[in-house]
Length: 265
Ligand SMILES: O=C(O)CCC(=O)C(=O)O
Image (cartoon, rainbow, N blue to C red; front, side, top):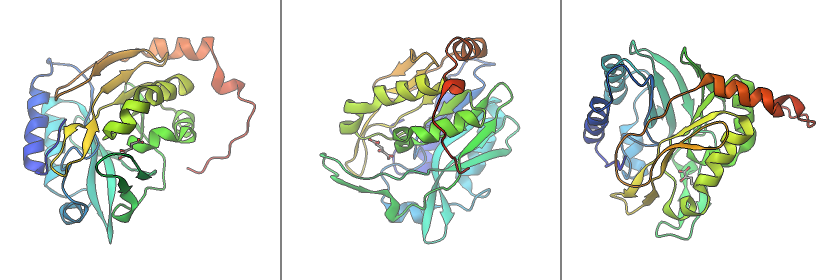
């Protein structure tokens, strides 16, 4: 997506994409980070933040999940969390119920050589503290967001919690995306032997921020199954559980590790 500031407009674009999906497939649809209001200032996002479980964006996502009979993950949307908001990724089931909420854990407090220069996400966003998986029936799905991709220990925790697919809604900067995006997404897929589903924001947004695009679906062998380099639109790929099991059996890295990592979950 190349999201604008208005949630209403962005949700209309989501519905256009859902309409274009062939009947009966797919089972899981993932929207990018900040799909509902990218480019709105942080203060505006705080004002737009909905209480969890209640609000127009969540209500519309619930209706869309039911109408199109899909598990639908709303990349992130601002959820009310006191003085700051949570960048929450919310999963709805095909019956419209909210199944899981993941609050972005690693916040993008980084200096980048672009026209934004200084990213200080934690100023307005309250970080999550919990790793989250959701059982989507055909697979256990691990939830991560954007900058999380640079923290492999989190992906290990998701795999240990049973994830076969990890979703990564994203709004990578143009500069860091060009340098690192494909490598990071492939690396996380190969290391944890999971499918990575990584929908991205693309283009120039109303706040002047430029995002890299290149939505990706990568299989557990690190092969790109689908990619959308530029523009808006949906990509899809088949989830092959037999392939996941075969790769894990033939190369049992999860069992062969010789480092003890203690995890807080
Ligand atoms: O890790 C990066 O390079 C980009 C991350 C990012 O843009 C974000 O988390 O919003």
